[in-house]
Length: 443
Image (cartoon, rainbow, N blue to C red; front, side, top):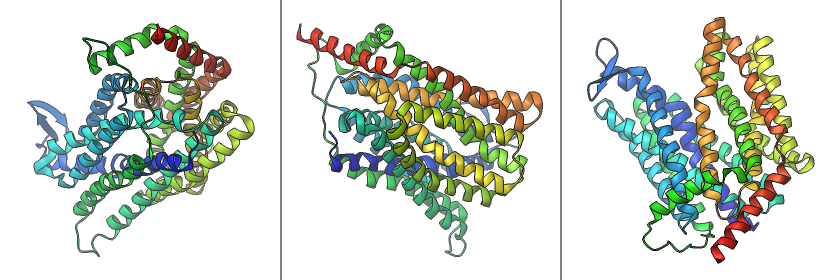
């Protein structure tokens, strides 16, 4: 535990994979794929997959939905399999490599390869989510309970730094592509591939420093690793009553993280439509958020050591609530948008990092990957409810401000449930489950 070299290697995976999240998912691939689909569409704006009509600008959201749906199905099984074997590190390496290579191959995304490009993105995004499960599962193994907040915060900070640096380089390439003698289309393709290359190269540091710390469990006669994974997952559902506090925390996290992710998604929409901020300024805001979030993650790691992890998360949710209320009621100028975005950046990394480290304290030893697969699913499901609430409020009231204000419900409800979570009891429940499993194994 607490080996500095291994912890550094672990945090470098956040540095490595965040390039995909920022450069590919958040900025470049969605608009670029939509442009390719529009060029391939008929006069009605439709493209066809096996005869099924698809609106050209719906292709990217469908790709995201498909990849998330596959994660929901596969991640719990993969997590259970990894906990039952010595494959946790190998599965991290496998899915990281698959995702990075798929991202590199997006360099060949063109109208002629439209459907292949969509498939490559689905594979990359699925692999990204899978690798995060095994990455997160290492946290309880490399950091003692008193160090997890700072280590988790360090990982998020490294992610914001790595993702921000590559995004800045790619935006410079895109803005000055004509002076470099290349087209903007080629600049985008280079940017997409660079994210995969960044992910592949820097993850090697993680692979070299992380140790396969999990002991091999003997697979019962007549079983396979896959069948054991299914049975272990079924066993967890049967034992769910043993972890009422952990389940309550997961519900709270699903709700308030839904609010966080929705704010991230709709912030640029609000800025462009309500405040008429141009695209260049919005991109600069995104870069500013990456920089400030780097320091914010460290700040909340420090705050957790002073107040306690749960109280620090509570404080962040109070700030989130105040931010969306101010945005809905009082935000008027571009300068205020910058200031509010900076406040969001401070609490963004901290609230997510501390949520991860707190959950790590609540899960039984030896089943980290399995439980973190449910955590990751809770994270991914946030792309469903929050945007729906925002969209309905906007449609009913005819105002983006009403949509923003509606998100207060998610922060307040998540906070209310979080306040009822008894963290010491959750830790005891996890320890009791581990001891029971050890006793059963000895029999």
